[in-house]
Image (tube, rainbow, N blue to C red; front, side, top):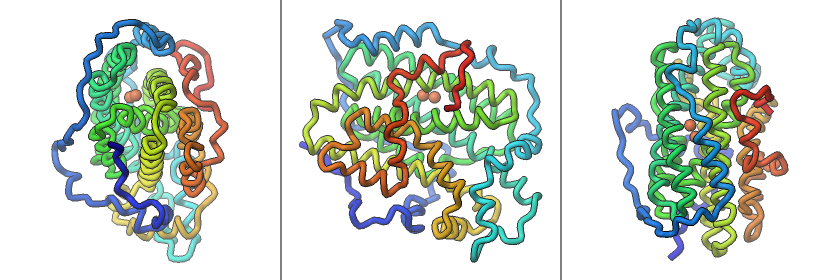
Length: 376
Ligand SMILES: [Fe+2]
Ligand SMILES: [Fe+2]
């Protein structure tokens, strides 16, 4: 039996304010823990043959690329959050500052003091989402070790579990020791991780986490690594990115062959999943919780932004989706069937990245110890 996604995509305008707020039931946000029901079977394999050389190479690479978050990062570095926010100011806040002159803008009377506060809260929010996303990656990958039917994928996934534990450790320590406030998990990110964990099909966990969430994270980490003036965060992100590039490659290499054998209906389900994931990942970056915390009418912010899309908003999306779209193309998801996902990515304004480099063999470029530009 082939499952179908429950959302009717044809009647929805992905750029309408109500759709952007659709997942905002904040009742769960302050709970200390949340539970997700799992539906996939844990699969033994008796085929120990190393029949997938690309995954095998990735596994060997992972074994020799381990680092220690407690000793390889210089935790003695002090972080002056105001100074960092000032240094980041235009890169972080421009796409919202450009709304100041728009009709009904909530930012009309704002000055440097208010924007500095936004900069500080954005850092708290951004790092909090990275932290919660890393915990989601830890759980998704732990699940994948059990659900993937291939021995080479089980081996590799086990190394990723260690990587993700290290990422949770370093982001939690950075937030607790160096910043001044944590945010709960964003509902768009949370619902996407929940769906990735709960899907009965083993490959959908990969699609949600390794291809969509980690593809976006790799691009976002790269952008922040490039602009942040803060040396500890720069170092931390550089180390994390060296692992994340392998993780995205793992997703693409695993699913590429598998998707060739799926039926049209099964592919359509995955196209819809990828689209819903992209939409939620985009909506996350409206940073609704930041406006709420600062006492700004968040619906008004988003409405003004949707009505007057600032050029920096387009640049920002460009950066976020520059890995996801080519990776979906590599998996055959973009044009399968009637090209449904191509149409949907066009509506989201991200189709122009389809011919960017995919991540299946890009991980060597991100390896530690090499003098490379990791921001591209
Ligand atoms: Fe990670
Ligand atoms: Fe990862």
